[in-house]
Amino acid sequence: MIRVEEIIQKKRDGLALSRVEISTFVNGVSSGDISDAQIAAFTMATWFNGMVASEAALLTLAMRDSGSVLEWPGLDGPALDKHSTGGVGDLVSLVLGPVLAACGAYVPMISGRGLGHTGGTLDKLESIPGFDTAPGIDRFASLVREVGIAIVGQTGKLAPADRRIYAVRDVTATVSSPPLMISSILSKKLAEGLDGLVLDIKYGSGAFTPDPVAALELAWQMSGVAANAGVACNALVTDMDLPLAWSAGNAVEVREAISFLAGEERHPRLEEVTLGLSAELLKLGGLAVSISEGQRMVSDCLTAGRAAEKFASMVFAQGGPADLLERPAAYLPEAPVVRPVVAQSEGYVSAVDTTAVGNVVVSLGGGRQRAEDVIDPAVGLTALLTAGDKVEHGSPLALVHAADEEGWQLAANALIESYVISDEPPVSGPVVHARVEGTVSNEIR
Image (cartoon, rainbow, N blue to C red; front, side, top):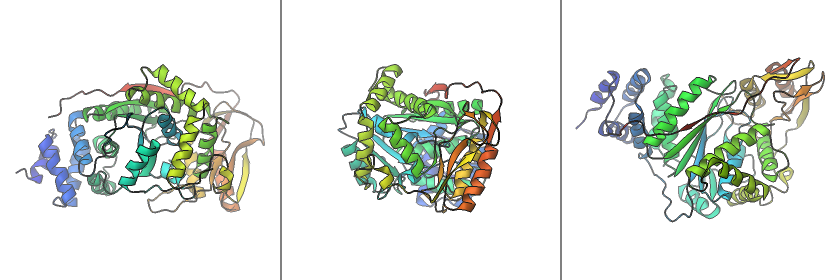
């Protein structure tokens, strides 16, 4: 029998753990036989010494197997999903999921809530009256089979060991450990029983990893761990130096998602990322033979309105109104104060402090600093200008949706400070910075 002290000592000494040792540790976490102090020692040793790819994959699999793992026998298409490292105006899940389902995939999407300056998919969907993000695991599986897509929050049955390990990491300054972060994220995604996963790794002023080189390294690590864990996984490294959409908030992003799906207006940055991620998944899932074919499939299903129909079906199946797409204004909450914030100079938008924009939404009440904070779904920002846009003195930078005049004023002041106006337009590059294919780099022992 392996003693937990021996496992901690081995990790402390910088040695790779075996499958049996990792399984023993995770099983002890789940059963309660391992104390918080021992978890803390393990996470700190891992923070200092790291893990090789195969070792991180074993940890991911053990954490996945600490609870239920969904299975999809009899489906006539692949189970696909994506994970984003978080951004501002990042409503990709709201449009990508319906797109994939409309193209023949099944999308069992388990999402999270916003924390800090980044938004959360669950918070956005819960701005829709009646939308149920916690239907239970059996109902979740039924919805995926019946509709082709369901978006829900994590249940207590999926990767329960992660919940306890994360709680210790949170109070021991080990959240930033790459193998612990990767295994935490991927254990929940792999519990969905996926055939393919794509990662959207953000860099820039609105990302948790501002440096593109560090983001690329994270993409290699995460896609490699997923591949070692047996799931086909690629990653795109994408630019979050600017908000990804014209809106940032909860109900306002749902409105923009509806507009995107209906073909009324599509933000170029949002469209590029959605097209790229969706095409990767369609190829990974065997629904497209190439990325270019996947892109054509995505464009066709958007043009034909099939993705919009899938979104409407999902909303209704999860308790929302049947006619949300036709009458969004009748259901989505509106803030009482909606007014433009105007530029103080003329020129071109050359840069945006995107984290500051996200924090403006938080200050309005549309985000949370602590997990227990209650959010206001109606507040946020719309009509956000982006890099290269021409502005005149006194012309709008954005519309602020606030709960009261004081909130509007504070948000307006902060938003003005987050924009850089220059005499010349900036040189813009592609939103997708790099593409990484997950490969098995170490033999799992």
